[in-house]
Image (tube, rainbow, N blue to C red; front, side, top):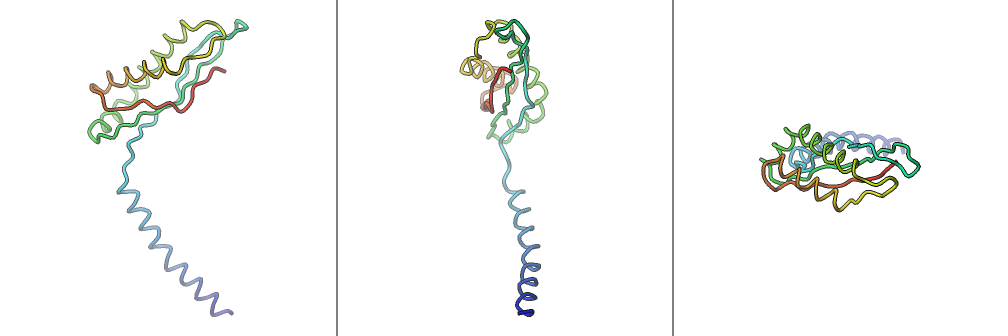
Length: 131
């Protein structure tokens, strides 16, 4: 029984470095095309007349490697352009009205293409809410 436990332990210790090397190699091979964007917020009026916050969680999917590198380098500019669009939209939103994700998504996609310089990046919603 003791010999069996020792053999199992020895086998596990021999396999761990091989598994770690395989996982690290896989990580090097698979490049992600997703560019995360920090949470975007804008102030809106709630139905009771108080201020509320429009929150959008998002990212950009850019499969083209050259455009992906550009998207990573201009992420702060993307975020700034997104916040400007959201603030303008939130300023015209009726108090208590829900946001229109289709309209917001279209506008943010247009801004994505403008900032990146050409189409190729897809704006992705993680979530949109008013709180």
